[in-house]
Length: 329
Image (cartoon, rainbow, N blue to C red):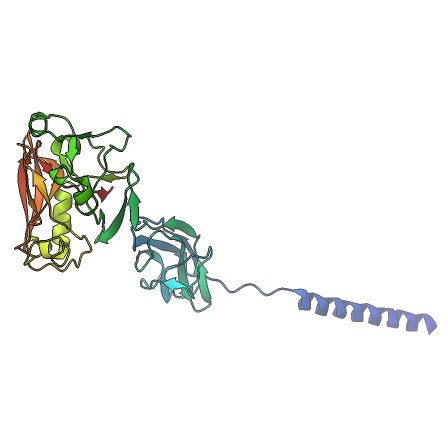
């Protein structure tokens, strides 16, 4: 009877221990995490002053419909949807995101996001720096920069006296030597740097333009196609001149027709130097070289005048001296 009682209580003890262990295991068992979307961040491209292009690719929706997706960005390394964000549709798959409203010359972090009923998943964080609002040439001259559409332009005329490889550009004062030159040269209007350099920049002959070394590294003298892109963005040749011109009559002759400078380009009337060496049109005309040849002797250029809203294209001999605006590559 005694041994039977011991056996009974032993079995009962084993059962109690088993139940206690089972309950403890259940308490320690972690619940499976709720699935979030899985996605990749697209590389950041078309980095300008105020805009970039990115996006993402949602590979897994986490078992729940993607209700929102896009990219988020911040100056912090791990941006979230509580920061700045785009909204680019719903569902899984590939999407593109155009980011706007950025500050020039600023380092940002960006990553794609996707949200389902369980929460928000993120792709890897990408880092980029927007284009600064100034550029400095090899001479140490600093220029304001403006974004117009998807182009980045200098907002001032070029005034370097050196090519971007450090070589000196000939400052040709003499009219006869200017007229006979077949190599790169520049001058200041009326050979007067003190009066004209800062506001109007230099006048370069076409040979200097065609070296391909006139603008700072990463920039170039625009082609005729580059100018046409600008003009189209501004609504066509009949209106673009007014949108490009500096306002008022401090530098432009009256009436400076339709000038509103809504583009920020701030075109000024730097005049020109003819192939003969004589100067003309200060105050009345802004004449800007392109790098596009029409003949072996001539280049295209674009002109804006004080009494018109239009911008027009012409060609001139490479011996002519005109202003230059550089465009970012």
